Figure 1 (cartoon, one colour):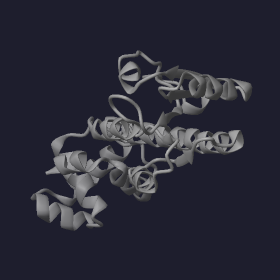
Figure 2: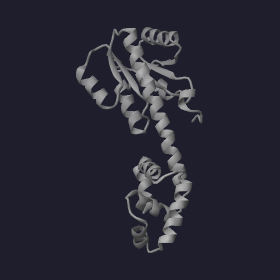
Figure 3: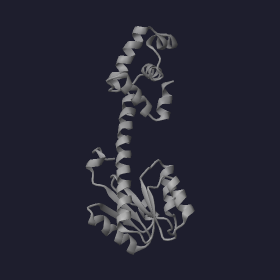
Figure 4: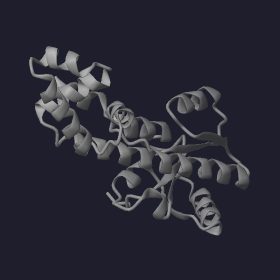
Length: 215
């Protein structure tokens, strides 16, 4: 994965549609406004490709031979890939559109669509992806810092996040209040938090499975 900030990497729009004319027209539309694009004729072709890790979005046809766009959406969700999706359909299937939107799609456009509507949807999707990637980087930073804490420091951090006072933490852990203060100081340095408020926000940003390691 690139270590560059998400916004410094040019976005890439990935188009998956079994209609060659649609793929070409969307790719040309993206390139006309300075957005890089790559297109595939099927979800299988996409999954077998080696695309660079860049911010962007997927533009998927709903109905395709083999895996549909919705199938791909479900697959990506199952593996924790939250890449924003703009769906296209030539059938105007309302229940399908509701299903796609509930699963996190950015938009659902019926063919033939206006170029501007697609551009608006893609722009929103790219902005969402950049925001998601930036948040993921922040969370990963906190996870990396948390990994440097000792088991006792994790216990102290958990207690501080619950709003416990030093004397309460000392009693719960069977250690002196001075020792608790030393642990708190060490935790704040390792978590790079300048205040208790920052420390609590860092704790709350950690994934639940990481917080549960505090014991």
